[in-house]
Length: 369
Image (cartoon, rainbow, N blue to C red; front, side, top):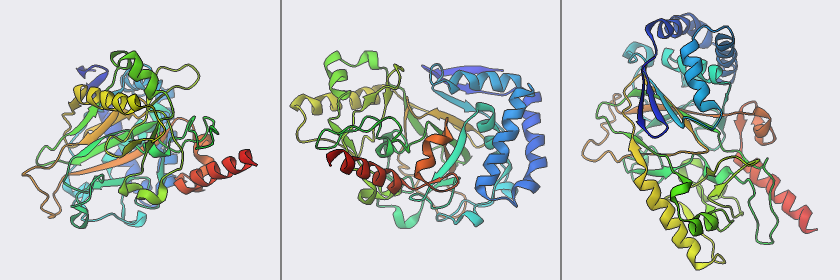
């Protein structure tokens, strides 16, 4: 399988014809079954089939490639090339966010569901973002064009880890109470399926290297001196958690992980003065380590959300036409462990961030009492 390293730990993959054919044949066969299922049932079924494909060695090279990213140790981003979707399969680019019953599955989306299963990860969605959908549309929406911090605006979407404000591992309140590692509703993985991109407006990523950050800045960034605020696309200030967290963290002696929303992060007032300087150094480093992904329609991108930031360049002169043929991605977030998100679910595979915030508040009240 031709693997091209585009950037450190970032790979573009072109599956060998026989394995791509296997995925395409399965997509054709499964489509009539999938259209009658809810999104939750679709991904449960696709993940199960994908896991069986890996176990039965039906797509050995794709399976082997995905193993290089699934451990959070080696590859950080993998772009898997596939056939360009045809208009009859995907329909027109939506003009606004859709209700789940109108968000129909496509053959490209079935391939992505199988890839999740091959990786051994599980898709989920939020009540706060395109409610009830696991499969989210990343599209231009006219009424949101002047908002900052939303993917529906043609403005640049700054670098961020997906749903950084919902990661409260080790977060601390004003009384010094610390949350344990299970207070986290943010994804382990972000996957993007590219359906249309007529003006080649890139998604860009940043792959930071903690060793290239000064020791003083790294120490400060590892302290709970910061607060990631929630973007409008995820409910805005109504879904902010009253907890401070670090930008750099680790779990069980893991390599450094990151959580940041570069356009919506604050340094708390009580932090040392140099904490703000450390944040500036880190954001500058992210800019230095950023790279435009050469994504074309049919490409499915897997991003390690614990180690990689992503964003989207501004549309510039190529403004949306709202004619049904604008840029269109579909996003799915995924977790390594469904048990981790269950305390925050309001229905199977649908997480309410307020459940995370409420549980954190209850814990804080109990500790204070």
